[in-house]
Image (cartoon, rainbow, N blue to C red; front, side):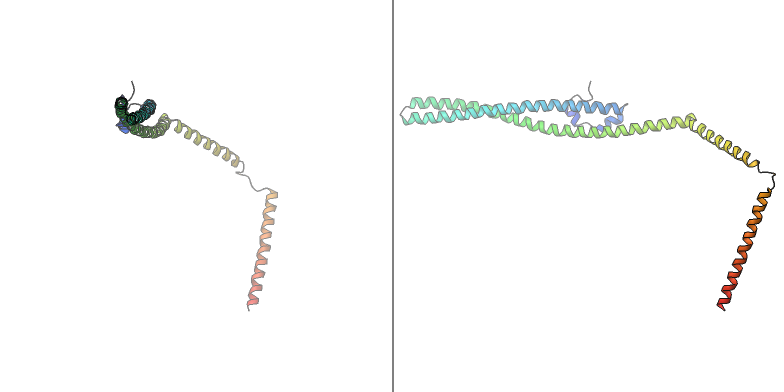
Length: 225
């Protein structure tokens, strides 16, 4: 059984209210769209038939009007020839066609009213369908977001993230231990002879730089005098 049972149900439906009450909003909105699209097809098919009926009635009316004109011309011709009997027969034939035209004209009015109603219904249906499709996209986004949140909550409560952080801390601790092991080889060792000579050379270089700096400062001071 469909979500809607009549055209008026769709037109007057409060989509938000229906989705709020639905246990499965995603399924509900899919059903709504399907039924709206099926109803649109039905209404359009009925409209097509009404348009075809209108064309047929208009064609018959034109034929009847042409017949009336023809019988009226014949009546005038009969009168001009003094044949009142023939004129009366022509007028009678013209009246029968006029009566038939009156029936068809009323039928045409009904068809046009029906087409106007179909046009109104189609507009309302299309608007409702557009609304439902917009809601479908919103529902899909909300469902996807909710599913992602559930998965994240499951991971948080399952302890997977805590375990990963603990493994990371353990890895950092292992790296610290390896670095400490490498640094420990330098403990208790004095400077080698080569290292002592390097230090001496560095110290002598600094002395030379200091002498050069003092000489430059003294020269600048003499210039100022």
